[in-house]
Image (cartoon, rainbow, N blue to C red):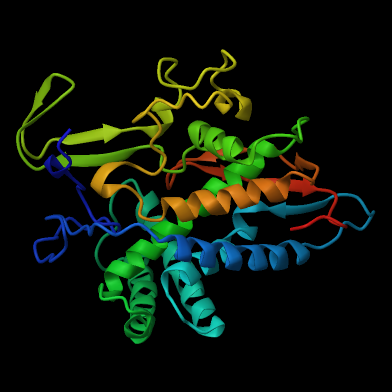
Length: 329
């Protein structure tokens, strides 16, 4: 399939006025280079330290039993700081942490914009809050980007950081939810990550718009047609999923043991020119999280529902965890 024949229909802020864009695609979306191995290692090192700090901050249970935490909340700062450490080279920790906190603030302000059934009005309170958070982040990035050797504009880098932080937070929370109440501690960390992303990819559907007439699956589409692709549904197709238990709704890392992944069928990070540039970092952080989970006994502290307001998020992702003492985090 010809990748240039498809583009994104809107910007991350749900604005459709992209006529002044100078980006790599006509709708204002840049094509980023993938993160490098060195950047991945910087991110992993930061995540390990920040996750250890976050875990140790969880209050102990009064009765000496399991401690409870909300995975979506606990993962926020470690993932944000790890992503900023990977992308923004040579920043001192204080500046890095400030930028990471500002990215999280923008993500929070963006949430009601994305979740609203209709795009909020330009001067609504929701829009003004999002605008203030975005401007604060972009001003900080304008100060630090020259020293990081990054030539992209602050607005472009802000969007990249927001996507590179929010999605791994949700993916990490889903991974911990799936690993809770397990009986098999000898799971393969990579396979646990792949299986979690098969069942619950945070970006469960993505849209593209045709840039001209094109044929998809034998169907002729005109220019400006919207095409939806669902990584979630692809993971539930028997002919596309790896061999394993018949129940495709069951979390089973062992279904990946044979290594018979179908090319092009597994798309949690997209594919082609618009694939997530931070996919190797995201996978590395998720794998490290799965390794951390091995020696810990985790149970769900409450039933989990699916929040579809921004992709699919576990709500709540409340976990009761034992074995804090004497285990590496």
